[in-house]
Length: 135
Image (cartoon, rainbow, N blue to C red; front, side, top):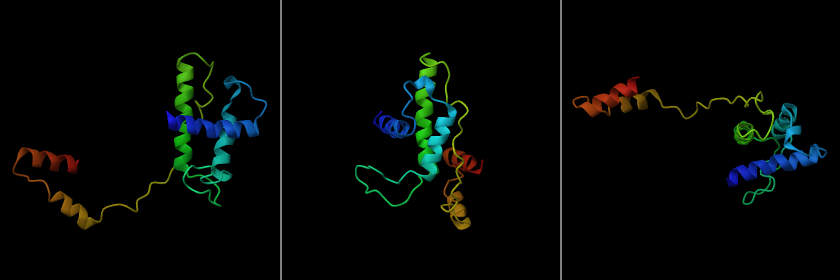
C-alpha cells in the first residue's frame, strides 16, 4: 500500500502541475495518462526527491519503472470501475511499454549440459525432474 501511495503521489504531483484545472477523477482521459507516460520517459529526473538515493542528472525513467507505475494506476482504476465509483476506466486502452528482453544472463551450452546431468534418472523424482527440464 505504501508503494501504491508513493506511485499515486508521483502522478498527482505531475497532474497538479500540468492539469491544474482538473477537479475529479472522472475528468481523467487516456490522453492525460499518455502525456504522463511521455513525461516519465523523456522528462522525469531519475531519483528526484528519493529518500535515500541522490537525484541524478539523467532524465527519463526506465520502461520497467514506467510499467510498474502504470500497473499501479490500472489496479486503482480497475477497482474504482468495479465498485461503480467511476463511469469508465480511462486506462482501459492505455498499453504498457514494450520492454526488450535481456538475454545477457543466459546459460552457456556447457552450463546447460551440466544442469541436465544433475537429475538421477534411476529414481522417480530424478526422472520426473529431467522430464520437466526437457519440456
